[in-house]
Image (tube, rainbow, N blue to C red; front, side, top):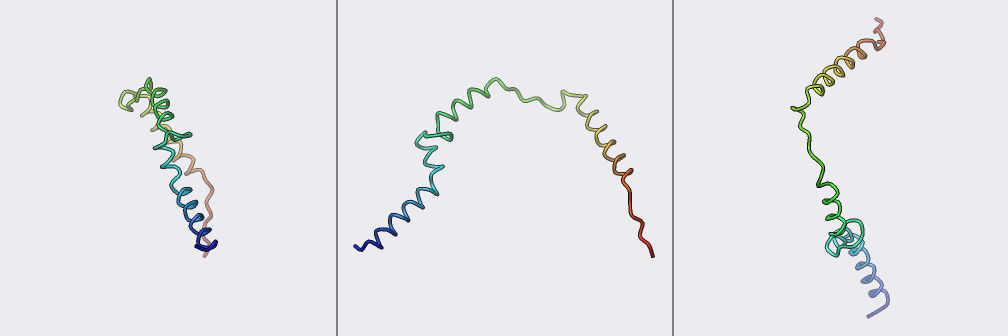
Length: 84
C-alpha cells in the first residue's frame, strides 16, 4: 500500500471521527454531553415547577397593557406623506 492511500485513509477516519464526536461523547459519557452530565442536570432541575399562565391573572393584564402600548407607540411614529 502506498503512502498516499494510507494518508487518505487516515484522513477519512479523522473526518469521520470529528463528524461523529458529539454522538460518541454521549455514548461514552465523556465531556459536557455525557450521560453523567445529563443526570446531574436532571437532578438540578428536579425542584423546578412549571407555572401555567391560567394561574396568573396579572400576566394577562400585563400582556394587554403591553399590546396597547405597542399600538400607541406605532400610532405616534412619524410618517412620510407621498407627494403627487
